[in-house]
Image (cartoon, rainbow, N blue to C red; front, side, top):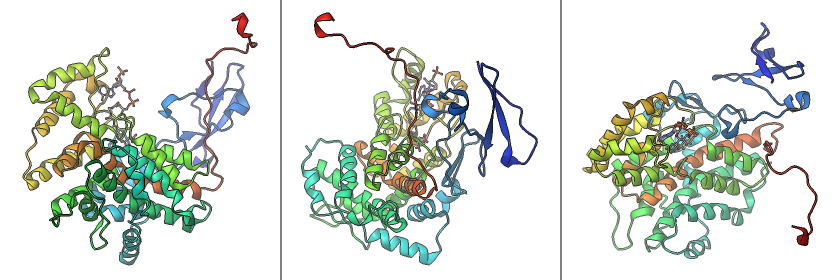
Length: 441
Ligand code: SDX
């Protein structure tokens, strides 16, 4: 059996190593690689060559797949930083477009940089007119994530001028187009499912107002925009914009590493986000709260969630990285009360959610496993109060996460020597055997 000796050479951080001693008692020295913050990593790139062994970490719970300067998470402390700025400060002082600029460029923009970025995004919000035919190919009961995923992948068919992934300017243009067009495509998908005509984006409106207008303006009368709704949506978009190497972002980077165009890479991210274990959880939370129905049924729900023979899980609870409160969930929970009050909405499901959180956080099963509410636990209640239908919740997540996906896709291509991602495996299938003729089987 091999073991990793913890002896570290007392020397400058850059040449710290760990020793791997294999079953033949051969020692392999492996470098320790560190970043600005967070745990140091054992660089295992030469393990197979030196020892003939692969490493094994299904789910990548302890494996860093890349270096990145975009987002930092400390799961034990419940810390989330975008380019070093705490999410709590960005939530209080920033806006989604400024955060998108920060994630993409690494620094907060000054006024002229922001104005220029906002102008670029505002003037790339329209979709090609032919793309409207794409939506018409669906039945009205199609899930909007199915439409969004396909529509984003199809963008490369319309924009041939930003597909050279070696050209930094074209990469930046594609990123801006993705951030700009996601709300337009999302609103088009929603309008198609309710049989309303697709609305053009209005350049006179700001990002969230423009999206709400495309979602809810009916042809027969002007829409009165509600600043509370736009502000709440902008804050939710900030909180959902990026989150390190989560499943969908890792997917975008992996697909991008093959040289696939930015639209195909982000479409793959949308597909990954859709799963109920990931971004699809916000839709699943609302369905779960509705199924529980009343605070009186919370105890039964907690019991079911603990029962290994019951597939029921508390959706919106638990996280691979956070073993403390998800800092985004804390902000969204406070926001929930404020937005529902300001909108004059009272939702009995909020009482169910609060009772469920209280019951779970007192229960040993959840405490021992460090299962806390995550970003998806309360967000759906706010989207519901804003009039967003449940099927659109993960679409909302995708609009916001496009900023992070675009930033990570660009960062991958800016990384010197970046290679195609290609994990190995432990093979458990049949050993080598000869073909058997059909009449001998
Ligand atoms: C997001 O990675 C990211 O950063 C994602 C995200 C982002 O911004 O990109 O933060 C967004 O995806 C948030 C997570 C949304 N998903 C959910 O809310 C779905 C419910 N949660 C789980 O399915 C689960 O907690 C995960 C998927 C989030 C994490 O899964 P892990 O890390 O693989 O943990 P696990 O499934 O191995 O669970 C460990 C234990 C198990 O029990 P034991 O085997 O130890 O007895 O905790 C239990 C699990 O059964 N458990 C739960 C539970 N989550 C974990 N039990 C009941 N209800 C839950 N929600």
